Amino acid sequence: MKILVIQQKMIGDVLVSSIICNNLRTAYPDAQIDYLVYASTTPVLEGNSSIDNIILFEEKHRKSKKELLNLGFQIRNEKYDLVIDAYSKLESWILVFLSNAKRKISYKKPGRNFLYTDNVPFAPFPKTNLGLAIERRLSLIEPLDLKVEIDPIPKLFVSEKENQEAISVFEKHNVRKDRKTVMISLLGSEKLKTYPLEFMSKVVDYIADNADVNILFNYFPKQIEDAKTVFNACKPSTQEKIYFDLLGGDLRSFIAIMNQCDLIIGNDGGAINMAKALEKPSFIIFSPWIEKKIWATFEDEIHHLSVHLKNYRSDLFEQKSEKMLKKEALSLYQEFKPEFFEGKIESFLEKNIR
Image (cartoon, rainbow, N blue to C red):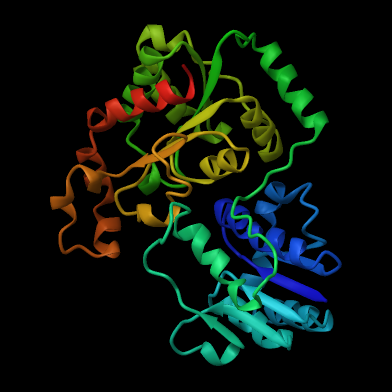
């Protein structure tokens, strides 16, 4: 049996959708399971034995119709028995159409249901604490009626060599071994997903005030000025706990460093999803325009919890569409005072550190 899973999106989406591959591997141990993703997301798939081949969706496929068609015919030549389209946008519709697979599964959407043999309802609300991001992916394998216990948790795999290299980095920076370490998801993937820097410095202060911990900042070198802004706004007593220059050189080294940390706090995004896949407790600060019900995965108010402005100022969201909220995101962020959830951070630290 040959299976193709499609997820052309960012790191968090690719990691979460890998649970489709993981459960298919359990059900069909001898199947060939291939995964079509963006090249930039492949580091989160390294070491995953549920995936036989990674097929890259590259920029050329987006820019050139000819290249997109060539990829479609490459997929057709593989003669897949099953295609699961977790992306479900125009680019993947073309690839699914050209695949000629016997069975094709995706979400039920008006105007393109004819492309698929199985159209799964796109759930509007979560049924469990798994969150919609997980539940929707798992719904794509429901038509297969797999006779196995379903595992909903994404997995990241860190080699012993990578772990040792991360430990060496900690030793190089003289990270105290007698304290636990908190990773700060300092910046979102864009400004509209980034908690205001002046507020984030207060969050870091809350952490330092409530727990004797090491603090690491997650940021790219090109974001160093924003990282410095947060650091400089922190209290001197907080700065003493921050290992500002301890960074991974690439995504795999970040994963290994995260694996040496004890928990993560900060903006929603790939770093949070990677931390969860490493079974690290998480505290998420959601952007006002992002729907918490989708990415608030595994919420239990102990190991995983999140905050959203809507929880504190629901009046600001009345009769506003997602498009309107996105347009107002920066001004709404200014209403999302860190004092609102100071107590929640203290409780989170109490439960996961002390």
